[in-house]
Amino acid sequence: MTSDAQPERRREYTWSDPKAIAAAAPETSGLEFLRRVISGEIPQPPIAATLAFALVDVGVGTATLIAQPSEFGYNAIGTVHGGVIATWADTAIGYSVQSHLPAGSSITTLDLQVRYLRAIHVETGPVTIVATTDHAGRRTGTARATISDAAGKLLATATSTCLVIPA
Image (cartoon, helix red, strand yellow):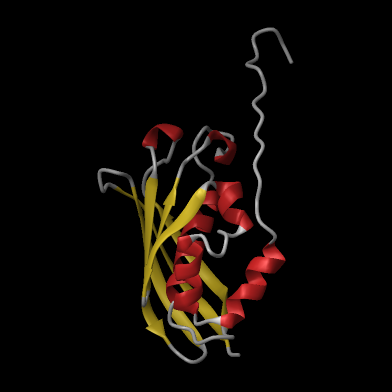
């Protein structure tokens, strides 16, 4: 470190056992599982702690996350990395499709397209990711997400197709 360099930053955080979270998923419908996550009965997944977001609302075909842009998510040019933003969108979209599933079924992402409209920084403040299912079939589900700041300004959009894995 040179004399004009800023001191390094540190980050410590905790997360819950991912195997225990996954084991709880087949016990109930997707919607009930997600409601249990929101209530705290089932912890948020480890990626939520890693990337500073949380599932805060869910209904049939819709899911809402709140994310806190943080320096630890920055890329080399000082904005939140597109992969972090894509993860927020992918998670919300997956939850919106999951909300349609019966007990024992699960999903995985087949594709994800993200359109970045504005840079996101710490100064942006909390962002809201709202996903809505467009199609929930036996084999696939499609959904879209918007990422907006507190004033409602659109920062990014995403679309995805998910593979439904039956019970």
